[in-house]
Length: 82
Image (cartoon, rainbow, N blue to C red; front, side):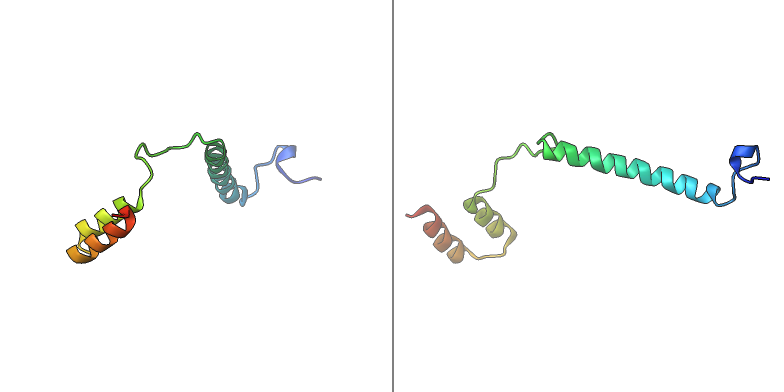
C-alpha cells in the first residue's frame, strides 16, 4: 500500500509547516525579481532632485555646523576657483 496525498490520505504533518514557508519565500522572491528588473531597466523610483554638487555638500556641512565659517569660505574659494 502506498502512503501519501495521492492515495486519498491527508498530507504529511510537515506540509503544514513547509507549505506556508515556501509560499512566503516564493512571494518574496517574486517581488525581489520584479524590483531588480525595474532597477535594471531604469524604471524604479527615482528622486526628482538634481545630482548634488560639491558646493551643495559644502553648504549642507556648513548648515549642520560640521565646519566653521572660515573653513567654509576657504573651501568655497577652492571649489569656485575665485
